[in-house]
Amino acid sequence: MVGMKLATIGVAMLGDERKSVMERLEAKCLEQMRRLVEIIQEKCRYVGDVAPPVVAAPKVVSSIKDSREVGEYLASRNVKILVLAYYIWDYPYLVWPLVNEVGKDKPILCISNNEGLYPGNVGLLATDGALRQSGLRTHRIIGDFEDPKVQEALSKWVMAAEAYASIKGQVYGMFGGHSMGMETGYFHLVPVQRVFGVTTYHVDQLWLLKEMEKVDEAEVQKGLKWLSGMVREVRYDGKMLTPETLKKQLKLYVAMKKVCEEWGFDFCGIKGQRDFTEHVCITDVAEMLMNDPYDWNGLKEPFVCSTEADSFGALTMQVLKYVSGGLPVLFADVRLYVPERDLWLFVNSGNHASWYASRSWDPRENLKKVTLHPAIEMYFPTGGASVEFDAAPGEMTFARLGLYGDEVFMVIVRGESLELPEEDKEKLRNQTNATWPHMYVKLRASFQEFINVFPANHIHGIPGDRVEELVRFCEIAGVKPIVLGEDAGRFHKPLWELVE
Image (cartoon, rainbow, N blue to C red; front, side):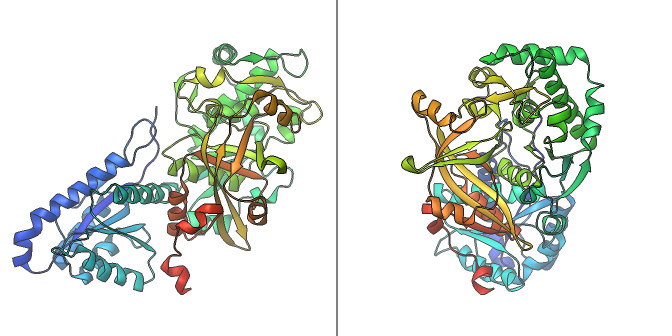
């Protein structure tokens, strides 16, 4: 499996200007710095058991010359994230040559011990106080490096910083433009460039259609055989869903994957409705396979693809992919609220990665729960397969980026994908659309709290509790995090919000 693009992390330690101190303590400082590198590589793991690249400074910064050299050393190794460690008292002004060489636009974490004998925490407060005086948005962790809580806080910050630094400079491929006038999904260039450093390239869907004509028939047959043999059932009806319409969808997947690779896109969205859905094929199968971590050629990196060219949805998904360590990301409509059960149905035609059927890295375990249905003729007259399954149970973190004026915010809420009796699920499915994928969700926030602030009809999610990573990401990026429900009280406002 090809690994994700990950930014390089630099770790440096600030020390004492007095030579008499450093002669006694430099070896201990270097040992602590090396331990931090080990902790980051042990705790921050991505799909495929990959750790982010980490570069340790070759010396402790205890002079102007040291600071400049360490900054140049880290900058020459393309460091995009900076972890500044403190184990003893340091001379705070020495941080500036280093930071200015690496760049003040980088995420910065200051981390220290909490010991009376070696007051690294005193040095941290003095030095980070100077960084913040200049307007830098830094974060702090103080405690024993071997404390599991400290290590967890460190790993969550690193995952958030990786998301910010890795996404910066990426390009979003938008096939066909925003769909059906959904302006909450529009690619708003100025705020997206300003906050995330991401741009888009708009490619007409005609390009994909022409690429589909070039796809090798043998490759399509290979895909058809694999998918047909893996899923629970293909419900051919001789009209909307036939082997030929399904093959069109597989050609679209191959074409879209090829264009994204050749043009260098990092994530994408496809309009689908109404051009493709009324004149070529529905995009559900292609979207599923793009977001899945496998296809008929084996394991692969999930490639974020949003349906209806929802650009803010795709950007949200890309953030979630990074903070989760590279997991497939859910895309769904906020379709139905069932008040008597305080239950949400998250449902969308296409774009549920089949991985969510069982959350297995073995495609057979997921696809055996998937049924391919004929597309609904009223909506999708050109035909093809709709993907249908019920999502596996488990904890989820949901999020969505939005705009208020030109200010970017992110709504974050935890929830649980529920396993319900089949009889209950059938009744609920029939209230929406029984041929589409469903997730039955209990949010850890009230109905009124959710609908009061949620910015769009599309929602995105990843397994587990990733609220802290998303909050730290928002703080690094300058995005307002709106955390709902019981998690809202877990986080203090950062200094810059309190002052501004």
